[in-house]
Image (cartoon, rainbow, N blue to C red; front, side, top):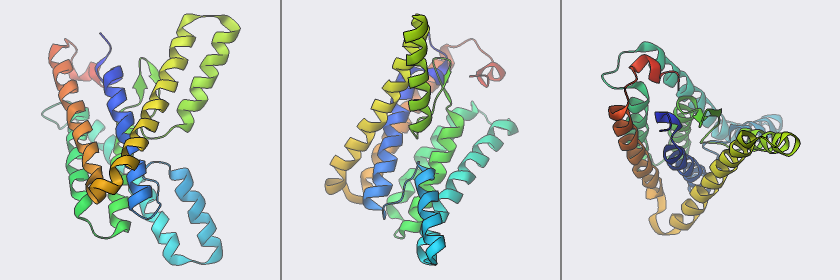
Amino acid sequence: MDKESESIVLGTLLAISGGLMDAYSYILRGQVFANAQTGNILFLGIYLCSGQWREVIHYLFPVAGFTAGIFISELMHLSRLHPVHWKQTILLAEAFLLLLVPFIPLDLFANSLTSFVCGMQVQTFRKLRGHPFATTMCIGNLRSGTVSAVNWLCHREDHHLRAAGAYYYVILCFVIGAVIGNALAPVTGLFTIAGCTVLLMVSWVILHFQHRKSQHTLDELDQF
């Protein structure tokens, strides 16, 4: 059985959620990326250079929110003050916070909260079948998948092929999430983000039952 947080099913759900969050923030919340902070920082620099301070703030806040999400996630990891495993706590927090997003009228704060959730997720779930990966962005997965593919072509070792397949699969799931977000946006509007809450709650259930079946201690689970 795969390690809990490395489960391919869990990775699938989280990657779809990541793509959906990005589509939501870009399509419905002022063309800001919830996950792709490189794009936000690029626009931040462009508007900073031209002195368009309103646009600077528009992109600065999501970057700050993403950073804060990483900070809080790691703080929760190190605190060890949780009645359940800390990754389950993160999933519950993500799901709850995303429920609030549709009710926030200002895009600036809605995007900041969504990016905060993305930061928590990218810091918490970082492996798939033993390989480093990200569920909220694609550039690292694309690089790692291509490197694994080249290694397979050169060495013909099956583990390189499996790694490449896992990376490209996660990218595909992210794209599927974006497609779902684009399809739902005209119908469900600002409540499109609720789809992420559903995916995260299903992920929590999977992680919960996998933990119950596991004989690992909480300390061992932190190594995943």
